[in-house]
Image (cartoon, rainbow, N blue to C red; front, top):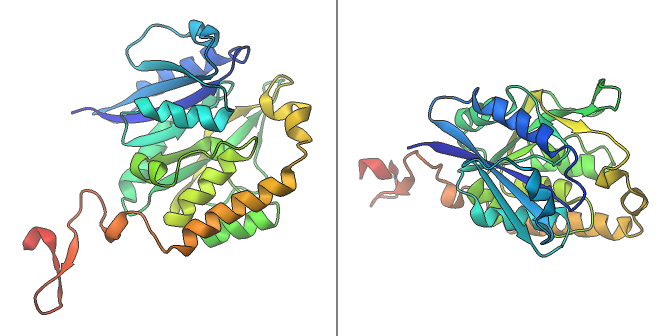
Length: 274
């Protein structure tokens, strides 16, 4: 049976100018995937015009969809209604997957089955074609909730939520992307981290295109008036989830591994051995 990584891309009417570049980067990455893996590309319009989806080739691995306008976070979450993958990866409509990006995501999740998510470094892609690394990229290794929350409080959030890959059950359990006017990619990383440690992939997994028309460059985003409210809500949601003590995977069992259960005498035994 083919294993699937579902890549989620929100797009708005008029924001499809670089969508074919994203397609080409994903198409090339499909040929690099480990044997037995394939990509499902979920392209979700934030709206119901259908116009931005007309740029897409008619190919079986591409799943276009539309939905009520609610922002990028809502569009990503609505796309999950069609997701068939055991992993979900983010990709914005104007960004690119770096060569080997999905390969490394899959490898990290396979190598660390106890972790529910991973995130790779991202490179800013400037209009002149040059690239710039993030200022706070962590080294390769585990990422904990406490580390990320402290960085959030210091305005030094070290990872790009646009490079997140999460196990589908974890992503659904934390509510996926909150329908916030901004910062939803930061919020979902904190929510995943509140329930599970993650893994940082030092090698860049994607290119974050910088251009004048991008959503995050618009005055309504850059000068957002409710930033203080966003900071409070994003932090409070993550802290509330973390305070419940719920951890992924539920019950402490890792998918594909024996579950530890108490025996008659109270000793712990493997469920496979009982």
